Amino acid sequence: MGREYVDFHLSKFDSKVAETLVSLGFKHACTTDYSNLGQVSGLSVYRKAVLEARSRTEILQRLRALANNVLAAVKPLTREALIVAARDKRVATVVVHGEIAELDRHVVEVLDNHLEITMAEVVEAFSDLRRWRNLQSLCRNAAKFELPMVISSGAMSAEEVMPPTQLAYVVSALKDEPTPDLEAISTVPLKLLREKLER
Amino acid sequence: MSGRLVRLKRRYVAVKPSSNASPENVSDAVRQCFFELYGKTGFSQSGLRKGTAGSTVFFSCYSEWVPKLVLAISLVREVGGVRTVLKTVGVSGTVSGLKKHL
Image (tube, rainbow over all chains, first blue to last red; front, side, top):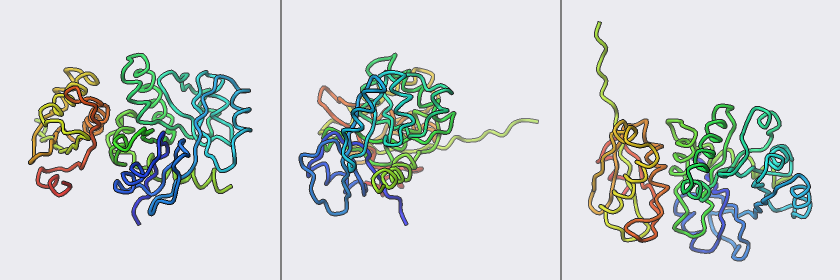
């Protein structure tokens, strides 16, 4: 049986995006845009929320307000928020970005949740050298500590949706690995979907 | 005892732009992005080359540099002043193998 590919984060979702996803071989997608959710043959679509947070209180309050059928991803803006997001069971993924706190052994010790990187964040970080280096060092640390990662497109339009193998190559380039990390776009996010939504 | 000289394997990556950008502009944009990421050293070590098969642009580099080349391709957001996203169509060990993906 072939792999089931998942685009774990889409910022915009409409019929054109859905069509592109199906043509590229995706079977599942998560979106933060609920305005055009409908039945698409060959594609399962899930609701997702990305919570930007600075403190523990902010994360806990926003997680409490979230519906059960919505997947939670936290974009931590401080080290405190990173540590809370790393171990809260309600959180599906911790969104990696250019301003994220360092992923040292203390954070790794408490890290229960998966790290997620979006292509949109990668492109944004590339415009600033400091953010780019921070992002690269975090991905290399994730590889060093053997932490599974999830990669998604974060697409705002159909043209930004990328083929699964392209995304797999991007994550392996960031981790400095020679082969495409297909797990980051198939097995790992699929397991997360089953664990977090079928509770 | 002399060491064996091993020929490095090449991989070919076909690219499809989202706009009607010319192959020359696509190639320039990718090469510039690759240069920004890995500098002169990376550029020469990767063995990066460009080519065209019909209207499709493809790049070739040594096999261990493929993820880095794909990263450079994915980071391109503008080609010849027009907003463009590049998508990889296929990766192959030969140009004829690559044509099967097109």
